Image 1 (cartoon, rainbow, N blue to C red):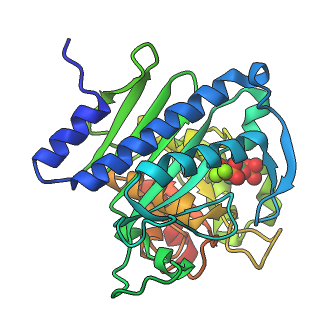
Image 2 (cartoon, rainbow, N blue to C red):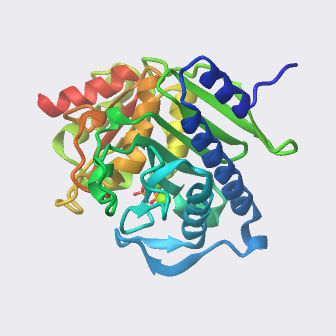
Length: 335
Ligand SMILES: O=P(O)(O)OC[C@H]1O[C@](O)(COP(=O)(O)O)[C@@H](O)[C@@H]1O
Ligand SMILES: [Mg+2]
Ligand SMILES: [Mg+2]
């Protein structure tokens, strides 16, 4: 059987003028970093990588050892080989400018180095999410690359992807022309194309939401989930199943595989924040992938990828997945 590795797929993309060589190298470097993170994650207690660092990130969340280690792996790999102007991450207060390289690199890399990190210590799937933007032309200004360069709507992404470290390790990627899934062949050390043209069914009977927050939700979300729970006897006239892995990567991966709707709405716990998930390095890359697979992604009011970010660590409400259900809950927000 002839197999297509990620490298071969990317070379073909470049040959057919769909992906500039520089972007190809950048994706290769990110994929290599994901393999290294996978290796660290899989060591578990044997590698002394479980547990917390005793530090907090800029968002006041306790950092796990693997959050910090994964961030360092991505930074180090891309600093030297990534064709980048800068990087930004969930685990860093400020954007990071590639030393001495600017303005050579044409791209910006934004990432959540380890998503679902509360799952690490209980041996449940986690992942890495990334998004690639073009570095804006700064008209010869060689000063510090500030946060503003990164504040681009999701529609400006040139690539997005995630790695999932689960029973199988996979890399799921979009370059803006569909979604491909690659499975890590750990004996060969290569990602192999196993899921060509991933597409999400328009209809679904499966939802994902953290139900423990129900009392804090806004009225449209309460109404929608109440209708889901009524099943065949309710207005939606079918029975729904529920799943919640507590790692966006794993919940989105399930939706790409068999459909579904994922919701992390804003709620009354922290009313000043418009949701829990981060726009730049969780919601935007996942929305790009979901849309490229034929799904829909909104914040209840508008398409997530149309939102103009105002800060690096901005949060957003997220409703994404199968078209019919995402459009239904989005409609309830304006009813
Ligand atoms: O624990 P909760 O509130 O259900 O939140 C789960 C959500 O939080 C996240 O874990 C946040 O990601 P991080 O682990 O990168 O902070 C999402 O992946 C997931 O959907
Ligand atoms: Mg995350
Ligand atoms: Mg994280």
